[in-house]
Image (cartoon, rainbow, N blue to C red; front, side):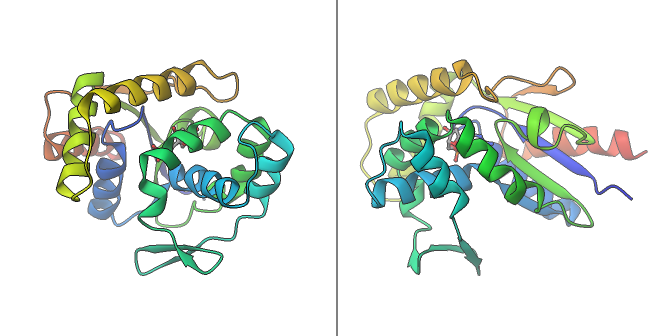
Length: 219
Ligand code: DC
């Protein structure tokens, strides 16, 4: 029996992580944050001085990753990296290593191994197109660049991290371009994905829209 997957893809700060984990909670499904794997790989490269354009070196770092997920925390080589990998600098580095086919290939099996009963909600850029092309429901979640920059700004300020809206908008736009233009698994909607623009929606409304599509499929 195939295990159901709900794929939620979209650009940075589109809210897909929050939405995907809430949908998973509501359905009692597992949740895969695939971006965390690219962030872990980028962090390992930065820590060990691997050039982010060195495909062989970054691919080896991705293949050698042994993260431990425990009680909501993420450990790498014994270090608690839960907050560190969320930093903007690591996100930017993640978007660079994510361009390398060797890195993407090395992370494929780990992502597919997350498909466990009773089901999986997976968020990322290529969940619907590459990792789980047979996902039962595919959603491409987006929001305008200014709405996403505002959200990211608020998140950082709420965490007590200083931030500058203009710099955030610039970094986010550059990351979007890199994620969309790359040859390997670009961040574009799968042909059979439902498009959802959350610019004017609350998190609850966005979650409700995904659950409504799911209910219709399950009916
Ligand atoms: O979703 P995120 O911001 O945590 O992802 C960080 C970077 O990782 C993002 O800029 C692109 C890359 N990524 C990817 O290429 N494919 C995925 N499935 C998830 C993330």
